Image (cartoon, rainbow, N blue to C red):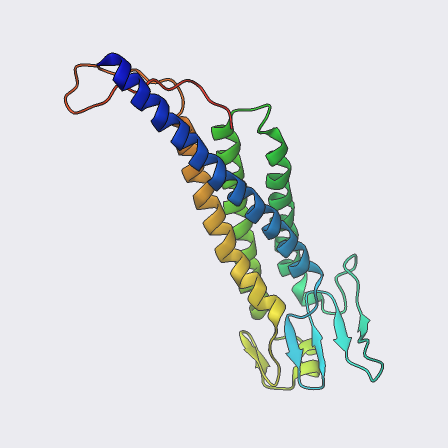
Length: 219
C-alpha cells in the first residue's frame, strides 16, 4: 500500500513540475514582452492625435510632412517641449526600471529558490503596474497647459482633449497596467505553487489523504 502511495506521489510530482514549468515559461515570455512594451510606451510620442495631422507624447511633438517622415522636436533628457508631462514620464521611468529588474531576476532561477524569485518579481511587477497606472492618470490631468492649448484648441482641460483625440500609445499604456497586474498575480500563484514542492510533514493516519513524498525542487 505504501509503495502504491509512493508511485502516486511520484506521478503527481512529475505532472505538477511539468505544468509549473510550462506556465513559468509562459510567464517569463510575457514578462519580457511587457518590458518591451514599457520601452515603446516611453519613447513613442503617439499618445495624443492632433487635428493638424500630428501627434505628441510625454516629451516629443511630431508634425507629419509631405516627405513621409514626421518632423519631431523634443528630447527625453529635457522632457520638453511640454514640461507638464514630466511627472507622468518619471512614473513611467520608475515602472520601466522595475519591470526590467524583474526581467533580470529571470537569470537567478538557477541559483536561488524559485518561489522566492517568483514572489520578488510579483512585487516588482505589481509596483510597476501601480506606477504606470499613476502615469495614466497624471497625463490627462496635466493637459490643461498653454502648450496643449496651442496644439488642441481652447476646449482643452484636465481629462479633456478638445479637438485632439487619444492615440494608440496611451491605449497601450492602459493595457500595460492590466498586463502588469495579471503578471504579478500569476507570479504570486507560481511562487505559492513552488512552495508546495518543498518537503512537508504528512500524517499517514489522516483519513482520505494520500502519502505524498515531495522533495525540494528548484525550477
